[in-house]
Amino acid sequence: MGTGSESEMNGWSRARNLVLKSMVLIGGAFLIKKLSKSKTRWDHAQIVADALTGDKFSQDQASRDPDNYFNLRMHICPAAEMVDGSRILYFEQAFARTPKKPFRQRFYMVKPCPKEMKCDVELNSYAIRDSEEYKNFCDRSRDQRPRPEEVVRDVAEHLTTIYLKRCQLGKRCLYEGSTPPGGFPNSWQNGASYCTSNISILKNNEILTWERGYDDNGNQVWGVKGGPYEFKPAPASSSSDTFSSLYITPPPPMSTEKRIEGSFVLQEQ
Image 1: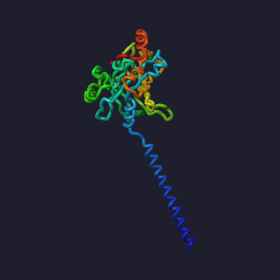
Image 2 (image 1 turned 180 degrees about the vertical axis):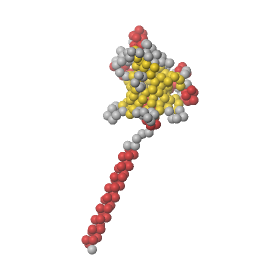
Image 3 (image 1 turned 135 degrees about the vertical axis):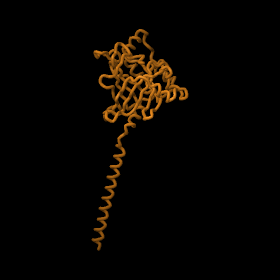
Image 4 (image 1 turned 90 degrees about the vertical axis):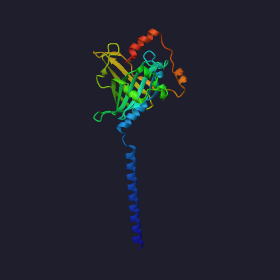
């Protein structure tokens, strides 16, 4: 009798252990599946739009290499959302010393790449129908900005498209991409016939941008040659303190004009 009872108890113990192991395995598999659940196409578009948004400066880079890079302010903020979910961002660039006088303005439209393409996010840039009306858009209160429906109507000429992919593990970027081979038509300055654009979104919320123009023979005629502009988020301080700390004394006028021609285009529209 005792032997039979002991055998029965051992049997129940083994069964219970098997059940517990099965529960652990099933729970672990469920947890792994939950943690590794892939992001949707729209999730990637949202991440890129959020990463681009904000007030960023190239102060550090301009301090390291003032002969080739300006201290610029890049300000981007949400402007409207399309019916299909695409997000329109307003973009402007200005010298850090004159942040209220942008020399470059455009709209960005952020949306997922088409399913048949090997990329995650499509970043389109557009000219603005009346750019003067949008100056300092991001710095204004919402009731002082053009309404979203007006923004949609003011999206003008398509300029470029950059196709972004998630960065491989181990890289310091989240997304990176460029325009297609051959770039996009461009005749803004210095005899250019086409332009290319590259962008990297880093994990520390920095943005690297590199825009270059080329003539028919493939010679670079505008844009920096040494590498992309590096834009870092503005320090956490008041606007006046920020602009004061980011100010760099400008070089002599003739030097500035010469550098502007070879560095970037002041008027693209």
